[in-house]
Figure 1: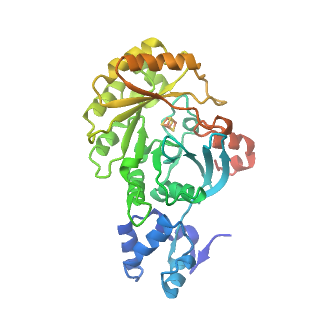
Figure 2: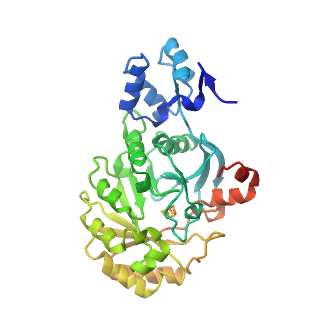
Length: 365
Ligand code: SF4
């Protein structure tokens, strides 16, 4: 049953959850309400996690009665939650249009971290990624990106805790630049969750024009670049966008990227058995990174049905890491998280799809 009030169907109402504070003030004023109520409503939504206008008890009765006919607060709905023995919790979230995305809570990396999505599917088609196989279905709006944090923080009772955010879920954040940056502004606002950009890491395969734009942002998150290869040919095979923005150009952009004191770029490197994990690859990687202030995060592949690559044995991973370390690189190996709960990005959705032909028939993820 659609939400119909005052003649407007629910999804035609303006979404307060997707507005930054200035937009909310404007929207309220436009509907004849004092601007200062925006700060109260913003705090209810983002800081307290309350999305029912009736429960916003510091607003007048008259305003609480008016708001539902003028606005909505779109909030991703948890439809599935799986917790691993290591505490990693994977959430399947449904959006207003029925599309589904994944968000993940990782308890100790060493801080508590939310991994959120920026798109439904992804256009980048990286060869080792299930999400890439879906193609891009649509961008998330800012409210849907920030809303994942709001929902996970509420579901895990972490609203008042310190946590980190990594934009490493489904999608390429720089391919949805404006919504991603607006979501960071919504999350940063002190009337909401007040998440400092220092606690946010944006992970990209290197969409070059957007990377250059990111370098000028006032609220600049930490940067992680997904490299995954040490030659142009190898990277083109694994990360097709490399045909447009090549390895050399990405590394040049990384060299110029403005870094605050003591911060470093993270280079992510998914290790694929026998493909990009040889000692020669490791030596080339040391050479490529040269004097860039960086660390390398090695990620042994999370295997999944439909992915034509294998995870290397621990000995191969260790040898690769040792060569990097001997070459002077700061290197870490990502602990395998949540392997008992389908850890690969997109796995809940792709495998859920396989189990749900009715949903597929309806055009939903
Ligand atoms: S690895 Fe990231 S950028 Fe590549 S296809 Fe998957 S979601 Fe997209």
